[in-house]
Structure formats: structure tokens, C-alpha cells
Amino acid sequence: MTIRGIIWVTLLALAGILSAAVSLFGIGRCFGVDLRQDTLLSCLYCGLPILCFPVFLLVRPPRRAAVLLSLMALTYLGAYSALNWRTCSELGYCESLIEVVFRTMSTNMVLAFFAVVILCLLAQLADDQSSLWGGR
Image (tube, rainbow, N blue to C red; front, side):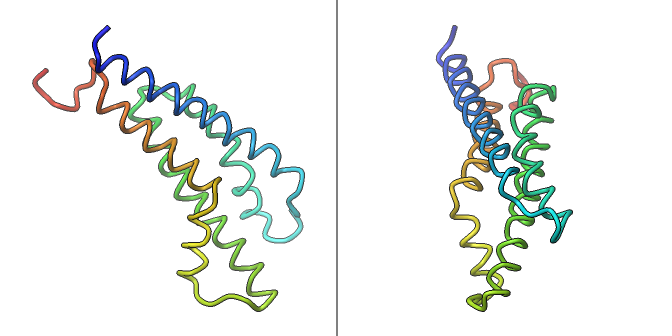
């Protein structure tokens, strides 16, 4: 096994562990969410993290999984930000929409979701059998 192969395996293992943690966290969040208000946003807030690990494992080729995970992470950021905006506007402490989005982006769950995407993309770059560089 080459150095690139070891890096590839390490990156995929880290992405797999992190995606499993995101999915478990999503399962835990399902028990505490109120589905009566903003049902679609709440379902996205719970469902997208739960699907992180199955998408990581089952979607092939890996490039397609990375693209799908990135779309899921962006959608999750939007749904989570909208729920945060709803909450802070009801309580009256919102400053601006951008501030809410940045505050949401700094949460551990969103950072972990995007870290899975980044690790998958880095693993694609390190893959020995990848056709990213064309003439290999």
C-alpha cells in the first residue's frame, strides 16, 4: 500500500466515524423536536443528519456520495438557520439574518456535517484509483 493509499483509508475512516456520530446525534435530536411547528423544517433538521451515515456507506461512486453529502449539509444549514431564526425572532433577540446563519455555522453539528464532506473530498484527491488527475 502506498502513502496515498494509507492517507485515503485514514481520511475515509475519519469521515465514516464522523458521519456515524452525525447520524447518532440526529437520532437523538428527533426525540426533542416539536413537529407541530414548521413540520418540513423540523423533518429536515432531524432527517438529514440521520441519513449522513447511510449515504456515506451506500452511495457509490464515492464522488457522487461527496456531492450528495455536500447538498445535504447545505440544506441542513438552511433548515437549522431557519429554525434558529424562528426561535430568536419569537424571543426578540435577533440582530440580523447573517448573524443567525454564522451562529448556526459555528455549532458542532453543522461543523461535523461539513467536516464529513471535506474529508470525503480530500479522500477523493488522495485516492490512487481516482481519475481526478486525468492521465494517470
